[in-house]
Image (cartoon, rainbow, N blue to C red; front, side, top):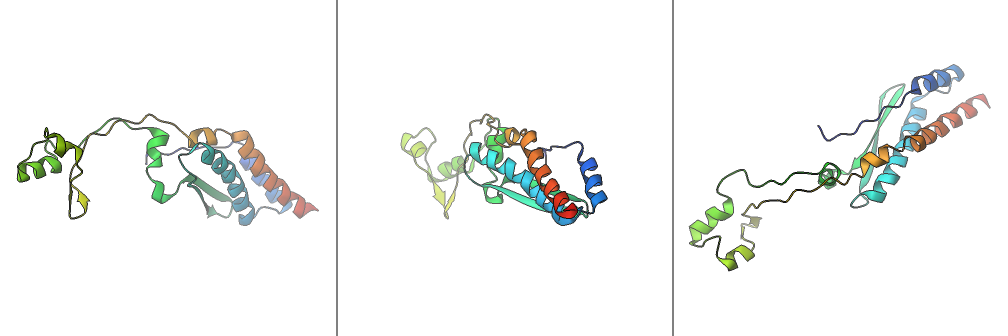
Length: 167
């Protein structure tokens, strides 16, 4: 999908090598570290998002890698329009279902009372209208740019794992 934001942190391979050297490298440490970094992003994204519906999903890709996904929950799919914006668009067909309905009942679109009403057929709206564009008001991108805080949170988890292992 083109609506994704990816951030890559340099130097994590060195941290992983040091964790392995003291025997503190484990999948649970990587999962905790990914969660800690994702929580920083979630906190800042929630502050600017249209609502408090930013979720975290952490997956272990292998024994030495965990990936955290931060973004709107599935039921808030329309948040992407606020993040990336959209241009003005309208129905793809020349004649909308609404116009077809008006023709069938003998009314016209210019009829003022018709244009003010919302028409339904079997509980579904039967018209399509032009949608104004929405300018982008990103909330995830600025949250992802807080790399210092993210790396600090991840580093604290790694440091704690090293301290626990070495005493």
